[in-house]
Image 1 (cartoon, rainbow, N blue to C red):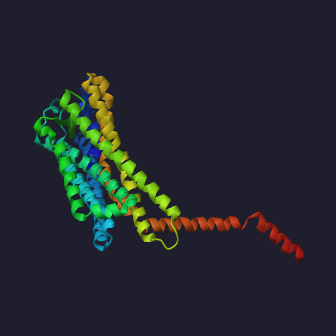
Image 2: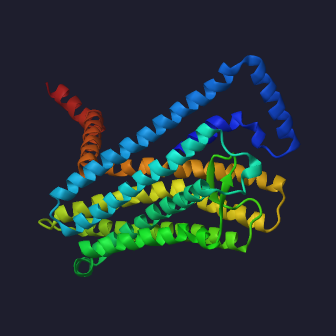
Length: 378
């Protein structure tokens, strides 16, 4: 999915033929004439640089996910606490899903990139690759959102009701929950196979998604409402559960007595901080696409003209660009928001605050007056 954002930003200026209006056709002729006068080198160079950017971006995403997966696997093998092990199992499954969701759609988009994209006249003629790419985007979009809400709910139960959590949450049930999440996302992604919605090429012809901009029907509207509704509901559940967990931990920290189980609370704090990072990343990356898709299909189904929907094409491209960053930013949540890293940041901040306090203490008025008295006595 990451390759999609780079392709749209670097190649769409080279594909003016994708415009449907007359001005776009005139612009296309002007660009083609200019390129023919300048030679083939000018035409090939931007495409080559675009491919390099796509490959570098995909490499960054793959390396980030592999590093995060290695850290999580190592922590899982050394973990003796069942609550922490359950969280790490969820987190490892999320990173694996992000990794696969980064490679498969990215490879398909890169293939479309190399083939020059799809002409606007063929947007509605969805082929097998478009169906698979659109289903992959829906599946790998819903899975992280579902997992994020499930992880937040599990931690909320562990923080607020630890005894109930220890009796209900096990590794076997966690694996069953993960299987249900993958199955639910797969069922939603496969709805167009049963004529309950449809996938189609999206402007500028380099990616596929749910039909939201033209010839939309009742099933398309229902499909988008289902997809966006499930995604936004998952974000809302994660927000509520993480808020409850955070408030509970803060209150417990304030009421903590000397000699209490500090290590257990530090584990809970680490997990909640990581969940908040996942939630913020998901909200920033996926909310625009979920909202813009819903807005676009409503306007299209209401009978808006092509000129009215032109702005929504831009919004959809912006939304999918942000969504592609989710698979890159998620691994860095586990890489940077670990307890060891947080402790180092805390110690550095505490050290800096101590240095500032010492510097300011040297120039306190009371110190200045006491030094004056000593001088006078001498």
